[in-house]
Length: 192
Image (cartoon, rainbow, N blue to C red; front, side):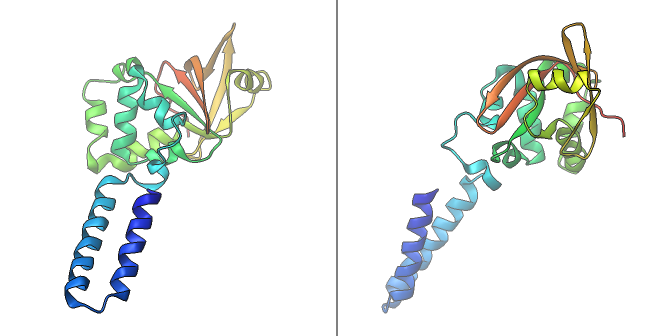
């Protein structure tokens, strides 16, 4: 990205300094081509950060158990949220969790006209801060709730040694450079 930016800057500088109409036409053509390439190949927001192989987004993309979640995040266009500096906790439903939904639900949600609804559901699965399993246990023992990016509060409870986030059982966690991925067995539906 930095190289493309520098190339674009050089092209624009050459364009400004050129006294030859042919050179100006060539430079304008190069600038348009570079701008088109940038627009077509660069993901939205900070999702273009490619040097962090351990971000929440990269972890989700690399998980065979979260392909439906990744497709939903892409359909909602919120990849940039999962690469922000954080810290962020994502309660990541598995593919099996999505399979529990009524037939056709996921296909309906990923349609462009349902983008706002899908975004609302997905941001209910993200909380600012780091809530790993150890922290979730503390929150449950104190009877606290976790605030989400959607403005909801998720109840954290325990049954024996098992932790539940708004009824979704915590299956594990994966540390990320910008927070933590907490794997859950169900779609979270916070009570408003």
